[in-house]
Image (cartoon, rainbow, N blue to C red):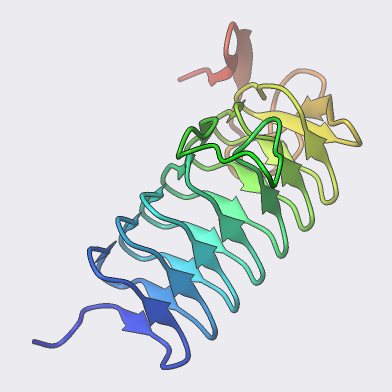
Length: 189
C-alpha cells in the first residue's frame, strides 16, 4: 500500500503512529509511538515528536524542534527554527516523573519565533505571535504579541500576522478586533 505522506529515508517513524495525507517529514527526524500528526504538515530537519503528541492539520515545524509529550499543537501552528518546549516544571535527573507531564497547548494559528521557549503548563492563544528568543512563562491571550525574557505582551496581531494599530485594526487585510476576556475577537461586519 502506497503512503499518502512523505518521510525522508533518514528519518524514523515508530509503530502505532498516525500521519495525515500530504504531510512531509524531512531529514533525520524521529516520530515516536502514539504520535498523531495531521494532514498537510511539514516537519523540518532534526524534528523529534515524542510519544503520544497530538499535532493538528497544516502545522509547520522548522528545523531542530522537539515536541515533547504533554504538548499539543492545534491546526496551523508555526514553530520557528530551534524553538523549545518543556514538559516538566521541576526536572531532576535522579527523580523520574513517570509520565506525569505538565500540559502545554498551542492554539489555532499561533506562531512561535525562532529560539523561543514555551515553559510547560501554559496555553498560547489563537493567532498569538511569540517573538524570536522570547521565553513564555504564563498563559498568552488570543492575538497577543509577546517578546522578551520573560515574555511580556507588547501589542496585538491580526490572524494574518500583521501587528494591529491602536484601534485594533489591521492595515494589511482590513480585519477589526475588540478586546475580550481571552484576548481579541474579530468584529464581523
